[in-house]
Image: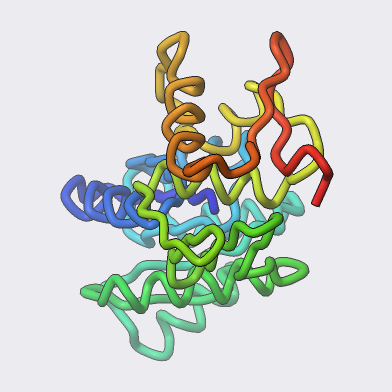
Length: 226
């Protein structure tokens, strides 16, 4: 999934980005309400994580303006206050849920999954292509019964490929879905990650799953289409 974090606490935002990235998610960071709202309007995110007390424009004002313009992205409010009045104010502004600081990272992840499911058709948590299986909740990957260890970034690539199995995935699609907005990619960064993923899931003479379409992108799935 892809998240926008609007938080002016540098340590907390770095912690969120690091933790979510390790779980295979993509995170964009903004440190004030104005830039956060602009990012929310110009990008596509599964959930917006929004602190109430941010500079330039409060989180409540950002949430209110996003909803007034029809932006449906789920919003999770972070707050150091949790009085009934504070909670009601956040929900009335258009937030979908709130989480009080300090919080357990596991609870944050659980709430993010719930909000993402509410936004539309619940995504499948167990993906299968041929004899390759990826449980996106437990982060367990195996092929033909053999467990495969992947990094968070490799899991992000694998999930995107498996959810788009059988169709052409272009470089631009991968950049937009799997990299932070402000990341400057080297010319061969995507190729390097695809090569690493291929080396881990195509072992011991297993049929290839990633087909390179030169000058276009990639197609994921066995040659037979199974």
